[in-house]
Image 1 (cartoon, rainbow, N blue to C red):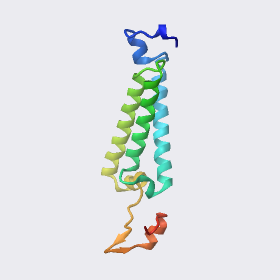
Image 2: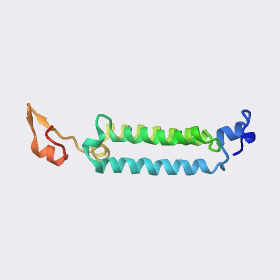
Image 3: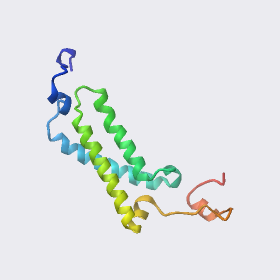
Image 4: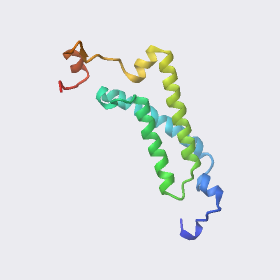
Length: 136
């Protein structure tokens, strides 16, 4: 895009960029796919990867960061696709949280099984080994 083509009053370009409106649907499909991919990947990476945040929250944060970065840096990209992506990410994350609070089975599938690593001041070596955590 040439500098003379960028106008502050070009609201259609600011909101939609230079993309067809059907790209919004594609953005929704892409974010649901990548959100699911992130959740599955983090589930496969184990407990250490999740830290203090739940897997769905970490996936939501990285999805939001990725969706917001491009429209900020590229004038050809509109803000509306990022808003749609952010809305879908929040909706999916909140849905996962809601389903997790309602169903113990869904919580175990999406967040993993709870493991006790220390019980009454004693390390549970079997649990540490299963979670691939060191004694430290």
